[in-house]
Amino acid sequence: MNAGVKNDDRETIADVSTEEFVRVMVTNSLSPLRVVEAFHDLVKPRGTIGVMSSGQGSVTNNVNGNYEVYRGSKAALNMFMRSFAARHANDPRTLLLMAPGWVRTDMGGPEASLSIEESIPNLLDTMEAYEGRSGLYYLDYLGRVVPW
Ligand SMILES: NC(=O)c1ccc[n+]([C@@H]2O[C@H](COP(=O)([O-])OP(=O)(O)OC[C@H]3O[C@@H](n4cnc5c(N)ncnc54)[C@H](OP(=O)(O)O)[C@@H]3O)[C@@H](O)[C@H]2O)c1
Image 1 (cartoon, rainbow, N blue to C red):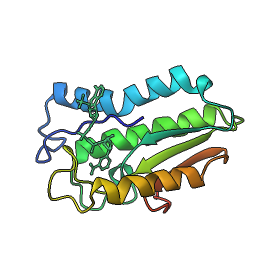
Image 2 (image 1 turned 180 degrees about the vertical axis):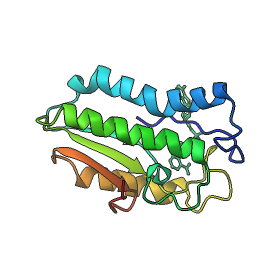
Image 3 (image 1 turned 30 degrees about the vertical axis):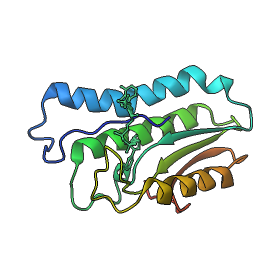
Image 4 (image 1 turned 45 degrees about the vertical axis):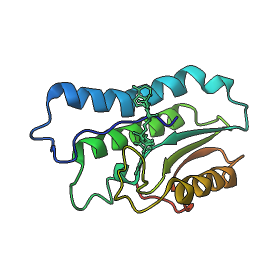
């Protein structure tokens, strides 16, 4: 599950419109879980369900408060995946929340530190390294555990 959106970087929770807040939350938090809930049974029993989160979804690492609407949507995504994992505690499938780093895409912009080639092949290697492990893991593109 990779789709995601962000709001204007300059908008804080104090000034974001309700409509924009709902758009970001529905796209980044609710919709991925709708897909996971609807299709997880179709994934092979030892297969992997990977969801693109973000390092910004870490509550622990939020020391500057930037991008707070987007951050909140990814933190909520992480929380919903934890609930999904808890409700499927005996499921052998691997559940991954991935943080790709800051990547030069339409969303990341031209100033981002990583090219797609520097991020995504490593992210895929990390996903493959976790194949066959049951449970939920929050990892970055270099395989480092991200604090919740
Ligand atoms: N770039 C970064 O630095 C960065 C960092 C951390 C996490 N991420 C996450 O990585 C994922 C991919 O982001 P990106 O950087 O590749 O952004 P992007 O270039 O803006 O691409 C976002 C993708 O999501 C799709 N999408 C958005 N809303 C959708 C909807 N309602 N229904 C279906 N598809 C929708 C878009 O489809 P259309 O083109 O058809 O609109 C597009 O393919 C996102 O979840 C993002 O939050 C990105």
